[in-house]
Length: 137
Image (cartoon, rainbow, N blue to C red; front, side, top):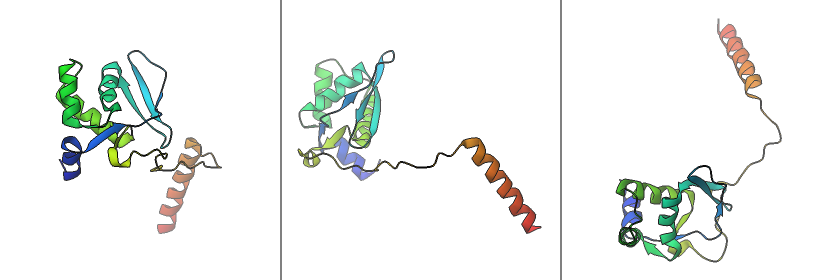
């Protein structure tokens, strides 16, 4: 585990991002979407309750203690995995970064004006490879 992950899981104060959109439920799972960065995380009801612990700023050990006391804690490995995935997706943010301004987009979306069909690209690349081999001989 790297130093950043250790700091995140032990001391860093996290807060759940405001304005998350809940997707349509499929069985017991659904997606929580963060519109600003166009990221999402698929969770179940128990995991949603865990993420709700971060509605008020707290560090991971405090959230874990609260989940255990309220008897809503998933297995420990799943708990930490959920926190890491939610942080990576931007659903949990460091308290010092949570301001009233919208979050920055880490990877701005790019709209392509040309649609590339997989079969056409495969044929084109295959012909280009054959031409390259033919030219080398």
